Length: 174
Image 1 (cartoon, one colour):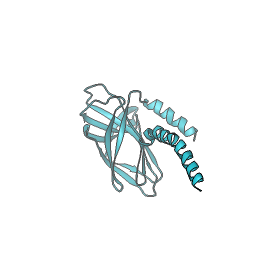
Image 2 (cartoon, rainbow, N blue to C red; image 1 turned 90 degrees about the vertical axis):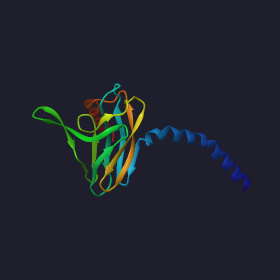
Image 3 (cartoon, helix red, strand yellow; image 1 turned 90 degrees about the horizontal axis):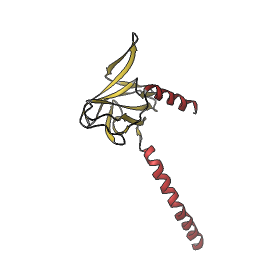
Image 4 (cartoon, one colour; image 1 turned 45 degrees about the vertical axis):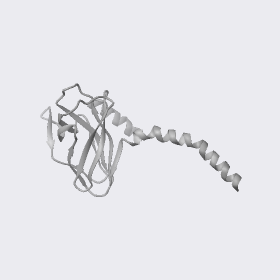
């Protein structure tokens, strides 16, 4: 019996480096997904900006995996004086941007915050958005409460058309 336990321990110890390496390799990806009750938040990101840019934008995907409606009522960040949710839309052949007071998330629905659509406007930036860095953004929901997410700043973030093409390709493979 002792011999069996020792050989099991040796096999387990030999597997430990692979387990640790696997956890380290997957942690950045899993660290960029967030869950608050039935709400799932995926890949918060922003574009890098030149120094002294007065405003920026942040994007992500929000999904309501529950069976009741949720409402996002506000957002805030220590790197901006003010954060507002905005939506771009085509009106009379022109692209217009308007502030949105709340975003309703029906059960089973995802809302994409992406270039050319919904996005978080960061007004009065207190720091430069530098590629490779992150900043905190807190989302406030009517029922679920609040959650802080880390927004990754990307030098080569996709344009609205590139993002749409990537989304289309991802959905075709599921």
